[in-house]
Structure formats: C-alpha cells, structure tokens
Image (cartoon, rainbow, N blue to C red; front, side, top):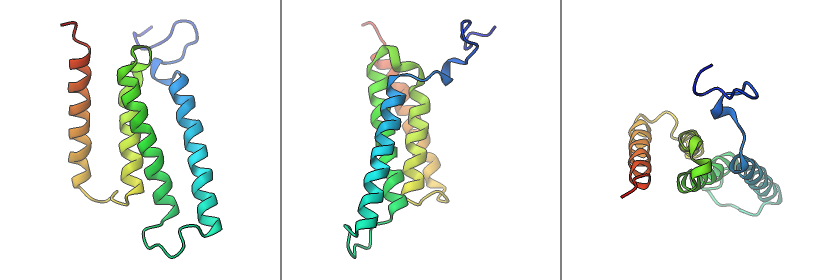
Amino acid sequence: MSDKQNSNSGEFDWMRVDRIDGIWWGAAFIWGAMVLLFANTGWPGSANWWDSWGVFFVGIGVVALVCTVVRLQTPEYRSKWLFSLIFGVLFLVIGLGAWDAAWWFWVVVLLIVGAVTLRSALNRDT
C-alpha cells in the first residue's frame, strides 16, 4: 500500500472529504442560488458587466482561494491546499472568460510558486 493510500478505507488521501470541502460546497450552492435569483429578478438591470455564469465562476473561484488560505493556516486541513488553489484559479479563469489566453498559464505558475514559498515559510520552526 502506498503512502497516499488510507489503510482503513482504501481511499486515497487527496480524495478524503473534510470540513473545508463541505463549507466550500455549501458556499458554492448558496452563491449559485444568489446569482440565479439576481439574474431572474432583473437586479443587475441593464448592466453590461453582468454575465451570470461569469459571476458564478468568479465567486466560487474566490471562495476556493479563501479556502486555500484557510487550509494553509490550519495544520489538520493543509494536505489538500494545492487542489484548492488549482480549482480556485481554474474557476477564476473560467469566470473571467480568459480560458484561451496564454498569459493565464504564468499567473497559475506564479500563484503555485508563491503558495509553496508561503507554505515552507510558515512551516519553519524558527
């Protein structure tokens, strides 16, 4: 059995659902309901910037990035911080409509390098 595999349940460690995952899913559903409510009641009016799908994906991307920061600060939830970061950036990219722009690749690389640097700095004993 590998290091990543849990001997009790046979699940892989990164697939384990924790409290932060539940909070993220709950926030994503609530945000989706709010965006749907706003879109169907005409709240944004004639605003040119309003795109329901874009607003939804940007919102859950921001929530995922906030969860990444919480994961980095909380030792018992730290194991899945990279997945939170990747999903947060991915949802932001989709929401901002820049999926086909090549410069997003470098944004993702810099965010990952920055997150790894912060994690190593915060894990030091001295």
